[in-house]
Length: 222
Image 1 (cartoon, rainbow, N blue to C red):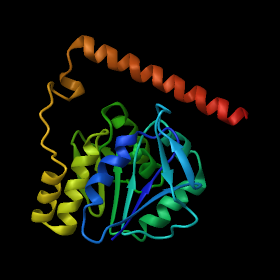
Image 2: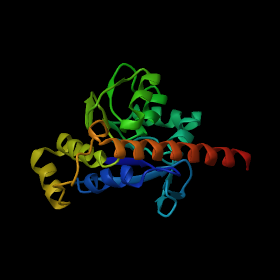
Image 3: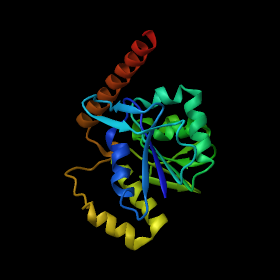
């Protein structure tokens, strides 16, 4: 089971590492971290780096493709060669998956047209730009395409996929092995957030979007 996980600068770490921790426990799993070029890719907070051992030129097929999200996904979407790679790998997969705003990369590659899909709550409506039907669900499976909502939903997606690949017993064993039995202190949906929390989140993401735009502008000026 060849599993390719895409990495890029300013990705959200758990989008990639959540599914990795689940899928790495599948019997026979061989995981490749892939990026446009090999080397260290810094996450959106810059303090953490993940290393890509393979470039997209090295990987021409996969049984499973995992596309994480994060503010750097806009840079991936802006590169036709990267979208072409996603389309080419998708043509070979048994399962094509995304976590959080990684769904926007799948959308930009034309993979979600006419399909129900999910992503982070702050980006859900953007899916319409790519012909997808955004739905408020944690994990959405349509054919061989599985999209997950924001960040931590990648763990759920990984377990959902493990169940599809290896059956209930293996997936359940993996879940217990990673001790995934969350008991969060709060309701985790934006729609149910108290006004002060919703206001804080809205301002936070507005600021991050501005910072992301500034980072892209600075990079293009170099």
